[in-house]
Amino acid sequence: LNTADSIDFMAEPKIDGLSFSARYENGRFVQGATRGDGTTGEDITANLRTIRLLPQELPADAPRILEVRGEVYMAKADFFALNQKYEAEGKKTFANPRNAAAGSLRQLDSKITAERNLSLFAYTWGEVSERCWNSQEEFFDRLKKWGFPTNPLNKLCRSLQEIDENFTRLMEIRAELPYDIDGAVVKIDHIAFRQEFPAGSKYSSGHIAYKYPPEEKVIVMDDILVDVGRTGKLTFTGIFHDPETGKPARLCGTSVSRATLHNQDYITQMNVGIGGEYKLFKSGEIIPKLNGCVKAVSYTHLRAH
Image 1 (cartoon, rainbow, N blue to C red):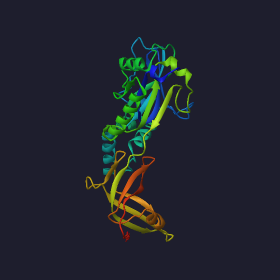
Image 2 (tube, rainbow, N blue to C red):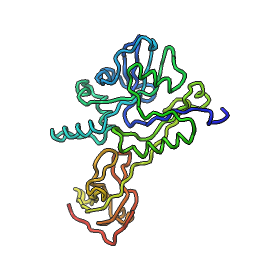
Image 3 (cartoon, one colour):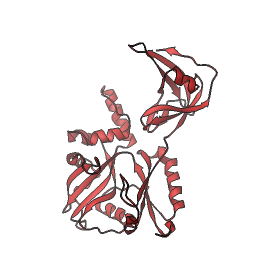
């Protein structure tokens, strides 16, 4: 290809969920699986059947054999409701929507999966007996016609500038979306052009994924608790709030009000003190960690817990 300006691209939000594959034969859903190691996945047929958004039968114009791939996720509102229910029942809660979706889809009892209110987006294909589309845009049109949900934020971009603008916009509205995303995937729209680009370990040829940097918040340190373990080792925990709301910080869809401060050397190195301001992020979008000092204070107060 001589110039990227002659190529159209499909930019898609990268949903933070669990990848799935749904196989249809003669218009009927017959098998579901997780991506697994890329070759062999777990059989989740019974659990996929419980997701109301997945078509069980396809129209007559669908290929005789069709493998549709996508992402199962749990919407933020459903995640919060599930955790509130589990907390009230004294059960262990989930760390984030992705873990909740993955755990739900891998349940041995499909009745439990059905109670979790999972959602999905379809975005690509695997095995197909006769491909009746020539571009990603045409494929999405087919999916919608056949009853599969596709992400409304998928966007056809006609230049590298449009890709960059779309990537930035998705990052800006990321926290406001009803589901978690952790990046964007860009695909060459015209399928025939994709073979001129190498395939990656997780994506087919003509695809590339971009990850967003960890979401950060500036917090104010309110207190430092000290715990003494059975061996006499001291552990330190920082208690903080979001100065914009006066409440726990919202990161990656959850409320956070404390983080480990490891040891005295870490506290000294990070200039941690009561009233100081610090950047906070979630390592792996799960574990809260400080990521630098914004405004230091001249003293540190430690309180035994």
